Image 1 (cartoon, one colour):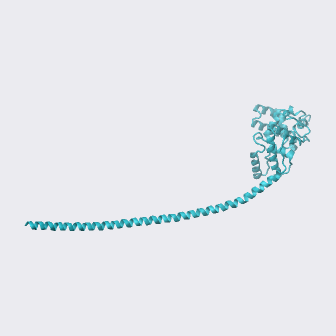
Image 2: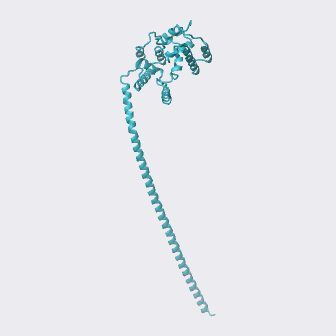
Image 3: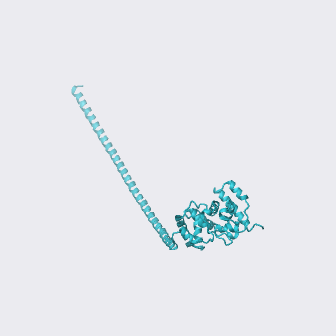
Length: 305
């Protein structure tokens, strides 16, 4: 083969090779364009999907917000409807309380002493400690803790009176003094509010010992006797300062129901209850409790029978 033929073959191969390269490049370009279009289409589709999802999410969120706003609006209306009667009741209650306390004056020792019922008043120092503790134990065991009104006793008495057929009082010693010396026996809310006000005022202006002195000098003990000074003479024929623990418990028991406890047998049962309570609250020891139970405590009216 001649030189020219060789060169011609080389040139032909280069042309064929070049043609093949161009064809492959065109195919690659078409494939790239196709892939690019596919990718662009996929990206576009993803973007549209995201936009739709976002739009749907915004619509859903908007609906939820509208529902919440609607619920809040309804709740506000309900609260307003509920508050209106409460405000009215509160105003009416305040007006009633103000009306009940109109003209009320501070309760002082001097005011109470001017209203004493007892004809035989004794000083607080003459009244035995056991008699004071006996009264506190059975009538108002939180006497030294409250400020005139015992909320616990009031709530308990209200629940008791609602849930049972019997009645139970929640008055403190101060409230009983108010009823005995300042207000009256009317079973009305107005009187109860006045007693509560007087009890709180009393506690502000007097010591607990002074309050006990007023109470013990004016309690009714049956047989036309008011106050422990008179009661000690009527039942035991002695001065109040001479009463024993057992006798103090007897006197303290009578005041709950004089018509019943003027009878010695009933008074003795009540005395045992009071002594138990005094021991439970720590006012007397176990030995004092047992000795007082064994002590003979006849009323002078019972002696010689």
